[in-house]
Image 1: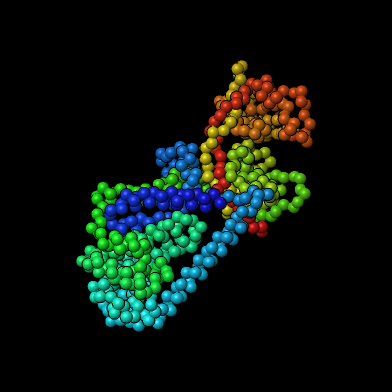
Image 2: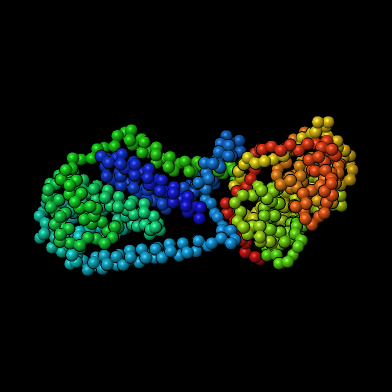
Length: 551
């Protein structure tokens, strides 16, 4: 829904800018103003987000200088193709609104079709006239105004006996008017705007644009007639005579002679002094504005491409996805076939956080079902993983896990339709630094026991051969905010850490509430310190995600 609102207000602002430009060019060519209004109409069919998405497909080299990610986020927020899924329990507005919109579209399509059938029947009953023109000239027994019928193969349709009601000068002027419509394919451009009116019938600006298009095209045809030397008075009398005698064309894409405000047209014809040419400076400004209207969203898309996560380097051969059976209590990840991955009763949020090595608070804009719907997934790698052996190193375990995380990213992309955008937000964080008296950690001996970080319930950590970065990641999960490792400690360490967790977050695991807080325990037991501050945190914005088809 946000994407639709974004597109509508962007198109409305664009139309307002064009209206100001048309006002500034009121002394210049009406055909120029016509093209401006036509561009405004077509803008409703081309969302800026489409240009942004096109630009996003262009990947700049990694070392190309670009705007800071926060700046890109602020600029592109209103141009991004946002997909929003209603949260559970909300009123389903989309269904009735969609039904009303479809009824409006259906009504207009039927109305346009009936009018086209009427004109088509008139044209079929018409006979060919031996008049020289760039298109066939037909004479119709129906009392319809002179006009051009047809979009791709137009014909000039004249009412029978029109030469008896008009003088030669008036008839020639009327034909010159219609030839101008043919020259610029006004029926085709009018048909394009009819499509816009049909799709956006609820928007008043669309109908206002249609009126401006009719005004400017008729004004341009009138000027073309007068430039050829046709007397203004005779031309005006001819238009009035046609209006008195014949019926106006029922369709905007069948250009006639009587369009627009008749009284104003006659006044403009009688007082016409010629339109001013667009100056060189004006042409440059119009060209620059046109280029900017297209290139700015396109450039934003190129910049946004640098905020997209890299494509997964590893894929999968097969994947099985099923909704989890209700009532299950255990959830988690385990080994799959060929060294792959198996998830049991895991929510999509768990899949996201595992695949991208982030926490829940780093996933933004996800719909409600991402938290509520659980799945069992079995992922088979495209290339079998080599067995780790009885005593694998920590690096080997982490490397294999990283490959399976990328395979899961591929599954989320292909089967869940996931589209993410990486952004940087300023959020509360903790900095893990050495305490005043220095760290008190035991260096893990080379060739010692297998590296492991074991949790003996909430508030108890036991580490063997663990880098401080893994401690920071574990604490981040306990504290609910990012913990950055700024200890400056390299290598692997053995340690134990015991503290009293927040019982409200762990109601099923009793703890010693008389014990130290995690902040005190880290300082007293490890010689490290947690400092609360704010800092840049990478988050992933969910632009699109859909519920998968089971297999």
